[in-house]
Amino acid sequence: MSGVLFVCSGNMCRSPLAEAQFRALMQEYGIKGWKVASAGTWVSNNLSADERTIDWADQIADLDLSEHRTQRVSGKLISEYDLIVVMTDGHKEAILNNYPGTNGNVIGLSELSGPFFDVPDPVNLTDDEFEEVAIEVVNLVKKGFNEIIRRLMKKDSVVQE
Image (tube, rainbow, N blue to C red; front, side):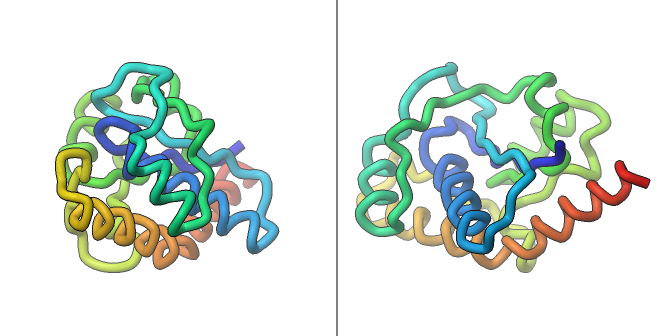
């Protein structure tokens, strides 16, 4: 089964938001059959999402992150997904260096709809700056949704041939 894994540093803000937004779009368009998850490059397993992220997702974006639990990127986890969507160049570099063979499968969230740029970590930002990043993540997933679907369909057709 093909799927997409969203990756950030702590798996507490950006990647859980991206995962939840992508799931919501899949549900909206009646798309099934792909795994969707998120992970962090520098996080312990089984922590909840950041409280501001949970609140913002619920109140502003109508996304539920109350059950989210962090998971750390690992070789086993990476091997389960055909597309790895990262927030920064540092995440891309960490995955490419630590997990050889993933080169064609790793892309920046911003690259899905335009030129690459880092989506900053909002954890230590002010509430207004945090909200800007949260809005940016949700909007980038919306803009890149069709490209993710296209890439997953391409991966699926290669596997089936």
